Length: 339
Image (cartoon, rainbow, N blue to C red; front, side, top):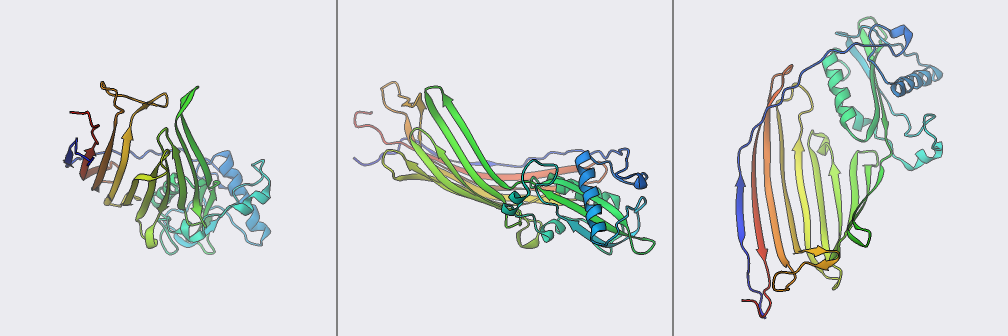
């Protein structure tokens, strides 16, 4: 019997949207990291204080002398020093040899996030924005940025300390009842492949009628730019026949607002899901009024993007326009006795 179309296909256009958000800058009281720098150091947590103290001690042990600068504003940045502590240290009960199995973020990966460089004038807004951006990255657990006295009056040396978190992640999700398992997800990913902040992983899902195997890659700062890319793809396999019965995937590129002076950001992407949709309850197919299992083929393809324009600094207003096209198609095979 040939397949007969029992369904519909639709195209949709979702048009312009806009919103605005206000960012209000707040001034916070600053406290000291060390007694000698009481006037100008940023307030740090106990962990950040210990991280900074160890960096200064390590420099002293190597023959260098770092001294905090209490008044760096407006001084010329002489150099930018990047320190990358190990993931596990004396604060953790984990043996140090475990660090051998972890790649620390490369120095250039950290430097590309900095909004200041040697030769610039010290600007507290740029330093605070850099600190915020680095702390926003999930791979970085401890971030400290401070100014050190330069080799000459009127100059400072910037010290940037970034400590990674463990990057190998195992995630799972279970849904079901005491007597049945309705959904199971298992994913394994390396979130800092070769120290480049590239995330690569595999995903496995299990459902009553099928399972899926897929992978994903998230690549930040494509070719040294401010663009981030994300790609995922996978296939659905029928548990009874062992044959493929669909696929899913997505591809997107985005550019975020990274600094107060940034004016434009955007996101473009596409995604698809082609599958056999079936309904189950307690591992048994859900039946229609005629006793027919509810099942049909579905295909959803989406593509679109958005563009944002930012205005202001102290009070930030962001207008965003978006466009999305989606095509949805459903198809069912009627039973011989169906009308």
